[in-house]
Amino acid sequence: PNSVFIDGNGFLYVADRLNHRIQKFAPGSTNSSSGVTVAGTSGSAGSSSTQLNNPTSVFVDKLGNIYVADQSNHRIQKFPAGSTSTTPGVTIAGGNGGGSAANQLNNPYYVYVDTDGNIFVSDMSNHRVQKFPANSTQTSNAVTVAGGNGYGSAANKLYSPQGVFLDASGNIYVAD
Image (cartoon, one colour):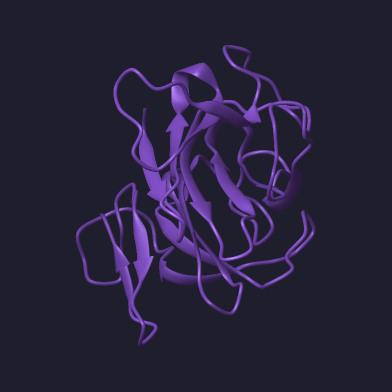
């Protein structure tokens, strides 16, 4: 497991990276509880709309939509509420090959969606945090909101950023 997310109803979502899936556990689950696959096909890496390849983080919005940083496919996938392992996801950011253009990602590590629906992605190998607009598609361009000036320790640089979070005032926090 690489990351977890708890939704407003207490369900636990786990980015099960090396099994290439997102697991969902009911509130009160114990170590003997079984999860349900809500995105990706267990043990099967791939790039189709129902597959993931090394998912590193998961975020669930207030409507139950599931956002996944699909690292090795260089994309962010969105799955509808109620998804199963056979539900196709939609590429909403990246997915245009690994790269540094405004519509590309290179090893996205973390995804966060703010209350307005804007999508923030820690773009690890590009050493930046990208902001995609609400209702983003695979062709949408992002704006760099942190880093993007090569890697390093200067105030305007990041070095393989991983986590990203926004507080209620819109301040961006980055695990650099």
